[in-house]
Length: 60
Image (cartoon, rainbow, N blue to C red):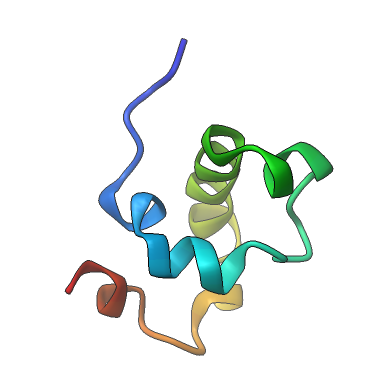
């Protein structure tokens, strides 16, 4: 089942900036849907990892 992802993880800029994020699985680095699902969880679990660039910038 594929749950809706928040708009931020569907942003092409967010994907480009975080496609080598150190917590991503190999599958997350290769597959867009896996990337989005994993990142949705990581944003919640590790918010300190996303403080360099405000997440709101990806929604503009």
